[in-house]
Structure formats: structure tokens, C-alpha cells
Image (cartoon, rainbow, N blue to C red; front, side):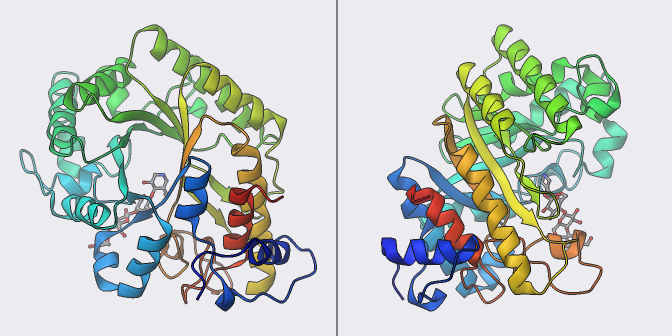
Length: 365
Ligand code: G3I
């Protein structure tokens, strides 16, 4: 199995991926190696992982080792994983992700310090204006300082913009905002920076990708205003993290609007990360082969646009193979067929999406 695909392999595979006449190459003849291809253009490529899955599935762990220069704990560093009870920490799963990353000479992208989901019940009951500051800063200081020097970057605040909450500032009326006001964002970033001054600190959100979706275009505006405000107040933020949850049911509209938005973010001096890239095939018709082609086209169109912006420094998919994706549980297909949102299939074979990604990474398009 060639671990370093030839250009012919990539082009042939990519051609098959985006609908051109397929060439003779088959998946078994060559594999795209994202980690290596990304590194050639100064880009970090990674995936979300669950430590228990990595430890239980050796073949999958080998694929992650080959393909990923960054590991993101899909759930292990969330409040409900780290904080089983008031005053208690359980770092076991998070420590395992850090150890797995170290073993494969990969970075860790930490996810996530302040989010309105994955909040344990005890926190929801305890959080109020008089307790909020200590709860937020205590958590961040404990977690970020534990992994200082081991976690390269963090999703400090996740999904903090939500225009449907009708706030003039466009912020989500999350439990953190209700307890502490909009300043919880500043506080979270300052605290994370205090805990690990070397870590790159990001604000992560979804719904920024499509040019032809009005609420996403409006969300981009709210995001830029929010980011400018943080920077104007001297908040130590280093990056905007686009989650990149895409939908094969939507025509790819990753056009000049997305390009302009990314340019504006870069003009602020921020890095840009894609942190949760996947392409849902939950609602599109067709057999697996047909769906794989559509999914590949979406990966190709999105990355081809996004990677034009040099401030994009990292791309992580939200899982690597269809064998292990949370979409199976949370976004199943009505026809009962397995979902196929990721670059590798349930047998850990590269899908057209993998070759489409490789083609964009090699710039051969
Ligand atoms: O591990 C427990 C298991 O022991 C228990 O039996 C089972 C049933 O209660 O739950 C398991 O935990 C689940 C966990 O996923 C692992 O499968 C949690 O209930 C479930 O809430 C959790 O869902 C995660 C979700 O975030 C909420 O935290 C998904 O895996 C994860 O893919 C999803 O990821 C989010 C990002 O963090 C933020 N952006 C959106 C993205 C997709 O929704």
C-alpha cells in the first residue's frame, strides 16, 4: 500500500471523486496521507477522536496515526467529561487523548472551555451571577494549566454567537452569559491566557460557511463585530475556529462571500482554523457510491475556497472514518442506511472525499 501517493494517483483518485471519468487507480493502490500533504503547505491536519475508540480499535488508531498531526478530544475535555461532581475532576479520558497525541507526535486542539452544552446538571444548578466567575475561572485555570505546553490551541468559547437570541450584540443567551453577562467571553480568554500563555486561543462557531444562507451571512457580520470588540478590549484571542459542519443536501455555496469573510478575519490578525469538518449525507438520496461522490464534491468545493486564505493554519475533521462518527447516533438516515460523512469508510478505505481532499491539499485542481 503506497503511503505516499503519486501525483497520478491523486489526480486519478480526485478525478473520480469529483465526477470526471475515473482512472485506473483504485483505493488499494494508494492512499492520501493528509498529514504529509498538509505539512507541505504549512498546514496542520487532524481529527476529533474518542480515546476509548482509539484504544479499542487498533486498525482505526493506525489510520489516525498515519493521517493526523492534530488530535481533538471529541468529548473528553468537555465539562460533563471532566467534572463529574462539584469540586471533582476526572482527567482520565483527556489525559489519554494527550498521551495518544504525544505517542504519534501530534498536537492537541483542546475542546472546549465554555459552551452552553455538555454542562453537567450540578453546574446548571450551581451557576448564577454570584458563583459564575469562580466556576468559570476555576475550571479554566485547572484544565488549561494541567495541559500547559501539551495543548497547542483551545476552543475557549464554543458557539457563543446566536442571532436568533435577538440580542443587539448577536451573542447567544447561554447560561454563561446569563450568569456573567457578555464579559464572560473576555474573562474566559484572559483566564486561559493566564493559565497557558503559549496556547493559541480560539473562538469556535458553526453556521459561517454558506454564501446563500441568509442567517449564516448575518452571523458572519455579528462574528466580525464581536471579534473586533474583543481585540479592541485587548482580549488575548488568536484564532477564529469555523466548525465546518457541511451538508451534502445543500448546493456548495462557498463563494466570494466566504472568501471575503475569511479575508476580514485575517485582516484582524487572527489565524483561522477549521475544527469540525464533516459533510452530512443524512438526507440526500442515492446509493452509497452516489452519495460518496456528492460528499466528495462538497469537501472539494469548501476546502478549495478556504485554503486560498493563508491565515488558515489547521483543518480538523470531526472524525476520520464512517466506522466511528457521532452522526450515526445523532443524525441517522431515515432509510436506515449507514451515514457516510467522513473521508474514510467503515472499512477504513479512502472514499472519493479522501482523494478530493488530497487533490486540494496538493493544489492540483
Ligand atoms: O459516553 C457516554 C456513555 O457512557 C453513555 O452510555 C451514553 C448514553 O448516555 O452517552 C455517552 O456520552 C455521549 C457522548 O456524545 C459520547 O458518545 C453523550 O451522551 C452525548 O451528549 C455526546 O454527544 C456529543 C455532542 O457533541 C454533545 O457533547 C457528540 O459525541 C459530539 O460529536 C458533539 O460534537 C459537537 C461539538 O462538541 C461542538 N460542535 C457541534 C458538534 C456536533 O454536535
